[in-house]
View 1 (cartoon, rainbow, N blue to C red):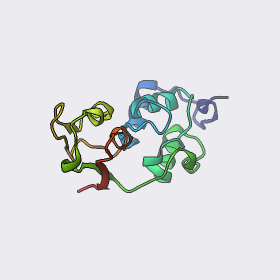
View 2: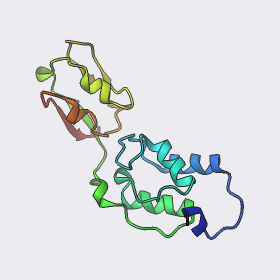
View 3: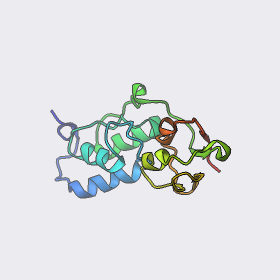
Amino acid sequence: MSLRDTTTSMAPVNTSDLIERLDRILPQTQCGQCGYVGCRPYAKAMANGEAGPDRCPPGGDAGARALATVLGVTPVPYDRSRGEHKPYQVALIIEDDCIGCTKCIQACPVDAIIGGPKFMHTVLDDPCTGCELCVPACPVDCIIMVPAP
């Protein structure tokens, strides 16, 4: 039985509209904690009945409830085994320690890190989603997460 089979409405669902509605609710961190490569693929999986609304740690319980409401399924808390729900944060590079390896740039799904090979890098706060994918990529541990400005 798919998630769509459990909805209370029998009206036809426009899948592209449903994907759009679900994607707008998701936090757009593109972190992959849900098991998909980004928020839109997760929204598509939910719309197609392939995933439940409980897979997004950045969205927390409130996000899971909102997604369940749109899907017309019973709300459940988000799956804590996928990660911790945290306040919005951004990456910060300790510039004195940066060796310019570009590994963080390659790991960033939203191009929020700028710099060149063998030059110090920096994070642009506005596009940074706080996904933390750059942290393990850094071989010198010069990236920390800080509260968003």
